[in-house]
Amino acid sequence: DTAVSQTPKYLVTQMGNDKSIKCEQNLGHDTMYWYKQDSKKFLKIMFSYNNKELIINETVPNRFSPKSPDKAHLNLHINSLELGDSAVYFCASSPTLGTDTQYFGPGTRLTVL
Amino acid sequence: DAKTTQPPSMDCAEGRAANLPCNHSTISGNEYVYWYRQIHSQGPQYIIHGLKNNETNEMASLIITEDRKSSTLILPHATLRDTAVYYCIVRVWPGANNLFFGTGTRLTVIP
Image (cartoon, rainbow over all chains, first blue to last red; front, top):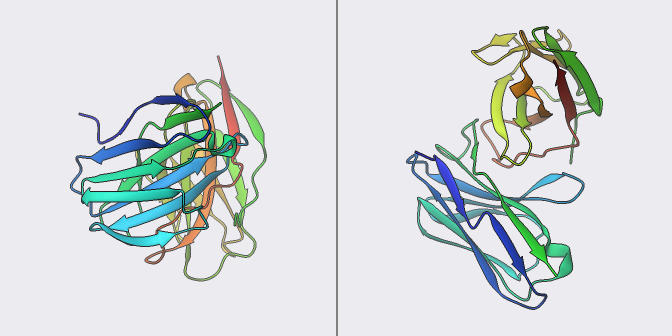
């Protein structure tokens, strides 16, 4: 069973469109995250949720809106997609806030044309 | 903000020990050293972490110098599947959960 799963794995879309990436973890963790990995392979935190509540919101355009319907899911919705949004987006989870180990999903490669 | 310095790339012969260095000269007393790796097209994978004592688990060993300004990750018997980018991260724990990944070291295990 996949611990942290993301859908879709690949997403190709036009500028200006709105898209969503879904993330689910079956580990029973309280905390979930979204990271962005750009073309230079830098991996940067975007958001952190603990028990469905936003904990960390780094400097991310407000076109990006995370939604956590329950603590097993953290979806990322992106409005008005731009070329610079092209990247690989990783979801991760950890047992609790402040826990050392984060478990990452396989990533979603977003390409904006 | 990456607070670590790692060589951009290293090679290691299959079956030999891979020693990956990391400098963290500005590490503070409550910061831990973490290692993650990312195999091509996969998400990062936790390897090991430590504060000041050397640590060992089923994947690797972590050697931290006495002054804590540098550390070495050791993969005792590297296999081809260990080819990946290895990230050394320092962070406060417990504390903020965000991990700051720098450029890492691309380890290539050669047959």
